[in-house]
Image (tube, rainbow, N blue to C red; front, side, top):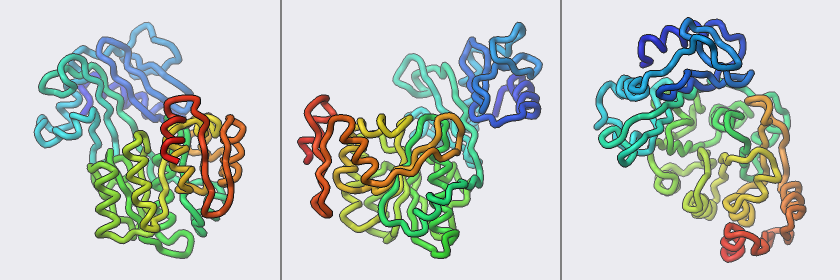
Length: 331
């Protein structure tokens, strides 16, 4: 799907680079670059890579990002209209394309594609963490996967699906993957999520969770990124049905997570009993697995109060910010 000049240079760079490549970034009028395990690497016209802009850079034409998107959708915008409105495309092989529009209302019909970010999937990764495997084997409560960008959150969610629904722990569980942005399963059958995993993709978390609860009777629901208050409330609705949730959320470390309003709302209802924090330095590396009490202690250190007491376990927020006031009001 790449324009010819970019395809030639990218192919040579991908073949020669010794580490992992996470993203290919193409910004109209700028030098193309890769996001790699060694940091950002800029592409030269002959496929070479460097830590700074090279003397002969591979400059992306102003129209080439839009040409790439047109190629990716087979010149059929109607068939991908909903994805394009949300500024992304997911191909059948799991490759995801983020789209930045300029002008208009953010679509191919009224705007221009200024840049694209091609995110490359990681397949079949396993996580060398006995604590995580023990946690998934017993699954005494919900699990939240947290980390910064490019730390492997989605890859870890896939591993959780395979472990639970593929019998890796000795027991098969009924799992439903709520794949709103079509990242968990890819655009088709790109990833193995376990033989007992149902996939609901391309629908809002609220719709997908309600569908799963009414029709699929899952034991575990695995969600991609939790970002909004509406998504938080959808998970709380599902909690009353006795389903265990495994989900992900952006946070570079536990203190930052403990300050997020959406997390506090879910924590107060005891949706998540454990937090798996991914390493910011090494993609796919688990830094720590935190228990409920360890997370509660961190929240307390941030100036908040956690009242423990079995079913009466409650988290109360001091009204320091708008997010805190919202959480306190909910309590």
